[in-house]
Structures are given as C-alpha cells and as structure tokens.
Image (tube, rainbow, N blue to C red; front, top):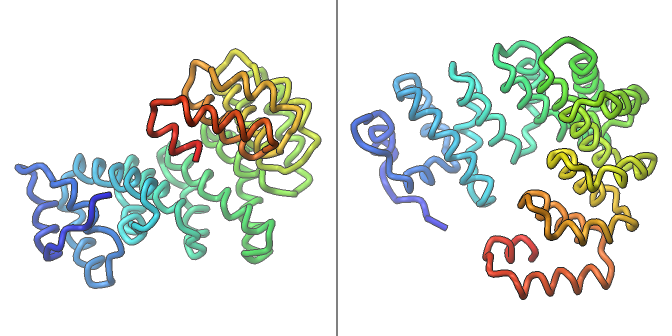
Length: 294
C-alpha cells in the first residue's frame, strides 16, 4: 500500500490545477481524511480543475478506497455530489457507499428523484439499499425507512429508465414491506435478462427461504449475469442443496461467477466445502484468488 506523501496541501491543489503535468498517483492518498480547512480549500478550486481530471480523480479514489479501508475520501465525495459531470457524481455516490452517512439520506432520495442522468439516479437507488437494511435492523428511524422505501417503490412501479428501476428493486430486497415480493416475482417473470438478474439479487438480500427453488433453478443459467446473481443469492440464503452445483461452478468460464461461487460456498460452509477451498487455494497460482479465498 502506498502511503500519503507528506506534502503541503497547497502543493496538491496546485498540482490538481496544472493540466500540463500528469498527477502523481501517490498524491491521491493526500486527499484522505481532509480536515475542514483542507476541504474548504479543495472546494474553492474544484470548479477550476479540468472536467477530465475531476472524472479520473473520483474514479481513482473510488478504486483506491475500495481496496484500502484505512483511507477515507468522504470529504471529497461529499463535495463531488454537486459536480456538473454525471461521471463525477456517480463516482462520488459509489465512494460514499463505504460509509454510513445518515445525514445524506435526503440527498440520495433527491438524487434518485431529480438527477438528470439515469446512471446517477441508479447509483442513488443502490446507495439507498444500505439504509433499507439499517432500517430493518432498527439502526435508523422508522420515518426515514418509510420515506426511503416509499421512494424506491415509486421508482420501481414508475416509468424511469430500466437501470434505475432495477437498482431500486435490488435495494428493496432488504425490505420487509408486503409490496416487495410481488415486484420481485414480476421482475423474475418478465423474461428480460436484466430484470431476472435484478430479481435474483433482491431474493438474495431478502433472507426469505421462499425463493430457494427459484434460485436453485437459475444457478446454471446460460446467461452469465443471471448465473452470477443466482450464485450470490445461494450464498446469501445459505442454501445447502446448492453446494454441489456451486462446486462445479469453480471452473466457470467467467471469473466473477467463479469468485461468487467461492464466496457462496464459504457462506454455506461444511467440512467438504472447507477442504475443497483449501485445495483450490493450494493449487492456484493467482495471488488475487488466493487472497480472495482467504
């Protein structure tokens, strides 16, 4: 892991504004854990940073933060929520998924309802999922939970772009509201691959055993996205009957399906599963796969 450079913050601001010089990648770490004065300084120059650099910056921070939980780019992401570039706003939301920022619930609901870009609205729908979960375990107020779920239901039942409605359905998977299961069934029966995948995603989040037979029937689906979500759902629901088909998918042609099978097997557990994963760990030459199995 690279460590933050011990540089004056003004030097970083100057580097961000200097379009003639590539930004030193290690400078990105200096944007972690900004204090109020530093945040204000960055906000002051933000509009003057080239749009292409702002896009690349947020995408890089998203990737770095996802791989190093000791870093916090929350201050940068909060500011970037108002950026005129959709890619920047979307990346900002993705970064903020790493934190339980309860005060941003109204912001995410507003983005879901009013942002001009469908991909940003979809990102907001995804972000609201963590708050549905927190509401179900009584970590946020019942009023906030009701507001979030009402908005997600309205989106799924409305006329927004499919990608937004699908992400909203996935977030509703955590909800115990009676309106949700019929929406999942409708998506599953749509014969649209992306909707079927979204329905399986929601099934996995539901912790509801009523979906076991459907999930099992989709584990070997020829469409990779559907297969992937069925595999994940099998792990989420801890379906013991899924162990054998999941073991077969350790040789799947798609890496994300293989990784999901490993994760789901680890969730289901069992002596045979443990031995298989240990053997796989010993035989693989892929360092990332070894780390993933661990």
